Image (cartoon, rainbow, N blue to C red; front, side, top):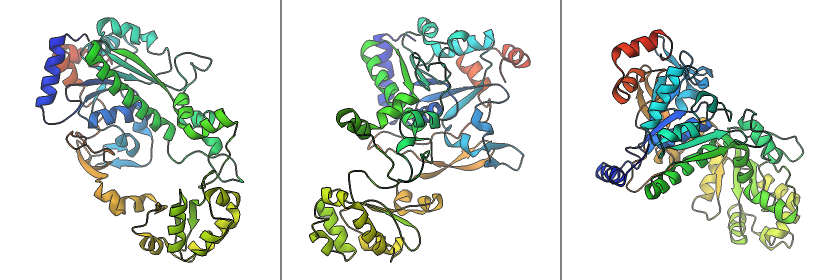
Length: 420
C-alpha cells in the first residue's frame, strides 16, 4: 500500500490523538502458524495493531489440535491451551489460499494492510502468487516479514524449520545438559520465541523507516540465524579464542559460584559475579572464612578450584530450605532465587505484582487465563485487547466490512469451500 505524505500525516495525527496505543491504525495480515510467527503478531496486537489471522478452512492453525490440555465449554466447544496462549488480539478468517479466489482475497487484504507475516517454506507462497514480489506491486508500502527455518536462499532453504532442529544445529542443544551427560533440549521453544522477538523488532524498525521513505520492504528471519546470533558470548569465545564450549548443567563456565544448589525442599540458584558479592554471600551463609582462603579469593581462583568450593557450598545450602535461605538473603546485593515449578511461578509475589496472570472473556469458553505482556510503558498501552478467536470467527466481518464483498458472494464462496 502506497502512502502519500498527507496520508502518513493523517495516520500520525490519528495515532497521537488516540488513547496511547503505539500501533493503533496498523493492520497486520498473519499467515503464520504454530509459534514463531503467531507470538510475534500477538505482541504487535498487544501494542494496538489489528491482526487478521488467515487460517485453513475446517482445520485452522496446527496448534488448534495440539493437546491435551484442551479448554472445554459446557456447550461442547473446545480450544487447545497451546493455541490460546499465542493468538489473542486476532481476527480469524478462514480462506483456502490454494484457490484463485482465496489468493485474490489475501491480495486484497494485503493491499489494505501495513504488515504481512508468513512462515511457509521459502517458495511456498510464491507458487500461489502471494510472495513479496507479487504483493509489492499492489502495495509498495507493505512490510513483508518471512519467517523460515534456514532462510530463503542457501543449501537448506527447502527444509522445514523446527525449534529443536535449529537449536541443535545452532549450538544451543550442545551446551545444554549436565557436564557428564548428553545434549538436551531447553524446556520451552526458546529458538522460536527469540525469532519472534527478532521479527517483532524488525517489523517495528521497518515501520519507522517507512515513515521516512514511504516504502515497505521484505524482512527475512530464520531460526538458524537467530540461534547462532543468540549464542552471543559463547560464539564470541570460539570466534576469537577458539574455545569450544561444553555443557555445564546450571553452572557457568567463567563464574563461580553461579549455579543451582539442592536444598532440603527444592533447588536454589545463586550467582556471584564479583568478589564483593561473593563476600556478602559467604557472610550470609556463615562461611566468611572462605573469602580469605587463597583458593577462593578471586573469581579466577574460584573457577580453578570449582569442585572444592561447590562441594562446600552444596553441603551448607543443603542444610536449609528455599524459603529459609530466601529470607536470609533478602536485601542482599547478589542475585538468588528458587527454582520454581509453574504453580510456584504464578504464586510468586513479584510475578503477581507484575500482573503476569490476566484473564479475558472468550466468545465460547468464558473466562480464560493469559500470560500478560512482559513490557510496561510509562505512557503507551501494552495490553491484552481481545481473546483468541474461534476458527473463522471473523470471516464474514472481514469479507464484508473490510473488503466490501456482498452477502451473496460470501455465501457462494462459503458453499464452494473458498472460505469457512
